[in-house]
Image (cartoon, rainbow, N blue to C red; front, side, top):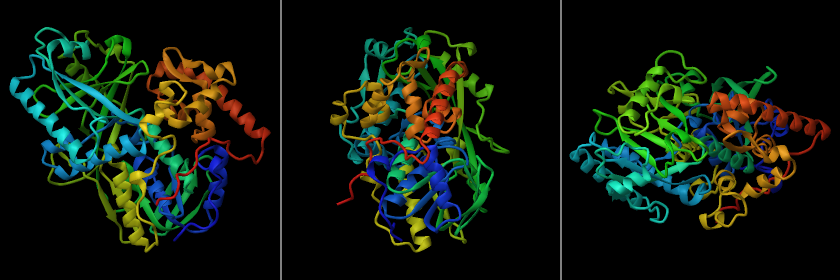
Amino acid sequence: MSRTGSPAPPHIASSLSAARRSRELAATVGGPTVDVLVVGLGATGAGAALDAAARGLTVAAVDAHDLAFGTSRWSSKLIHGGLRYLASGQFDVAHESAVERGLLMEHTAPHLVRAEPFVLPLTPLVSRGQATLAWAGFRAGDALRLAARTARVTLPAPRRLSATEARHLAPAVRPEGLRGGLLSWDGKVTDDARLVTALARTAAAHGARVLTRVRALRLTGRGATVRDELTGEEGEIRARTVVNASGVWAGGLVDGIRIRPSRGTHLVLRSEHLGALPAGLHVPVPGESNRFVLVLPQGDGRVYVGLTDEPVDGDLPDVPAAPESDIGFLLDVLGCVLDVPVHRSDVVGAFAGLRPLLDSADTGRTSDISRRHAVIGQDDGVVTVVGGKLTTYRRMAQDAVDAAVASGRLTAAPCRTARLSLVGAAPVRTLRTIAAPRRLVQRYGTEAPAVQALAATAPHLAAPVVDGHPVTGAELMWAVRHEGALDEADLLDRRTRIGLVPADRDQAMTAVRRVLGETSDRARSSPGSRPPSTGAGPPPPAG
């Protein structure tokens, strides 16, 4: 079914705000039947909302919490090319990953995803046989890049490093016995939660109704009973087909879905503790042939170290905790290679995410379970998508919407998302010419000048909200006005990542509450006003 009526004016099309949520929630609950209801607003759910809306379908997308509340904000921030899957013989998964990485870097989100160098230091703990195997893997990864048609300028070639070069790119590594290193490249997203926000806003620009704080209580193939978590009111959203993209919680909404969650834990360190890190590090896990701990400089005064792969049993928490056993494991691996010891007291924060792996009776460790995604149709018409990973969210969404279109016998255009730019995206050569700080361009793309202009309107908006962290009050204000942030947690934990460090979270709270108060005052003084202009609208029609 094609969308009817005129699209929203371009100047307000992509802005998400509390006012827009209220209007669209009122129009959706108890309102006309939509073509597609998407449950879950992580990367896959937001991607499915965008895919369906871009095909000309009417779409409502709901989440019980916020954009990127679940697994999508707890990744390593890497857009992998699939090298790991080659080693286990999953050639189709590896190729799919490499293709999707190239699309993000060159077409859909070059402002958010860029190349990141990694050094595998050849310490005495890495045998020559292991080094040879790793080098063969990096060469195979470069072959994947070529097969995916990703340009060499986008992802440079791997190469061997002398001991001097390795020390320059990995100065934190212990120099004794270092005989060189292996340099490789992969994709890195500035912030996984920001990628989800861009997906949701782009979906909104194409007409999707993006509704956070709306919990699906019961699902059928004809819609859902939902509850507004802000008011407690319940109602029905009617739909011709439903996509269940609720990740590790998917089995709680439909029968017959067995998820085997796996916990991935990361540490947060201060950058000054490890010194300059021109590149990330691959640190081999002792006793494992194809497993590494990653040291990931973030460029914001922090370094992430991860990750684990541990099964999780029992009830699933909304926000997983990082257990001391995981923290100790990561610190032990770091201690094998770093020149400066990292103690438990140096860990200023930690986070853990749950991978929504499809359960299989013939697998042992969760690290052995395939990352291939699955689209499962129910007898009542609900389409559930599980498995996969952040890198392949777009393909997961495409397959889910294909299945939903078939299930609901909908008339829809072909998938467009392989070449559909997200809000803020532009070719790399254009991004380089934008008159705004590089950090803002890497987070907001073409909208960076508007964020910078907002900072010029008041001193407290121009100032960083935390000592030693670059986020300003203007970024908080932008998130409330245009990115759907409704409260303190949205701002601290997802639109920015200040909240990953509890001490920083406490320090930022005054600035966050001031911005929320000013936004609330502004809304009260302008009843019925529309979301302010962002200058971003839907991309031009295909063809």
